[in-house]
Length: 101
Image 1 (cartoon, rainbow, N blue to C red):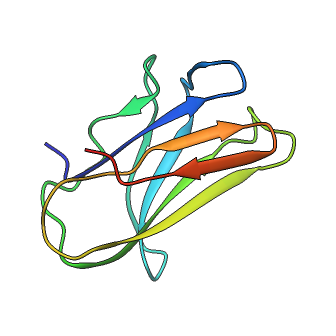
Image 2: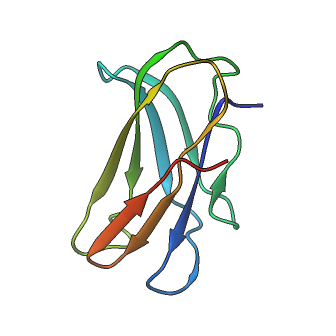
């Protein structure tokens, strides 16, 4: 199982956001993994199976869903090697995130 997972909810329409390209990058911009959200708006397998403590970022290509935000970048810190679920809640002119479970 991937140690980093995500999902995207399109709160503007009240549904999961399917087909959103997502990149997982190291803090220096090195690409670690790429995936696309499934029909439930989830990316369950976003490599790697283990992550070192450090800073990472998820980059969501939301241009097809938002005229205002072409992309959303969420930068977060992994303090230990535990699973991190980082969701994105997207609306036409705002977004939010949190540490999920």
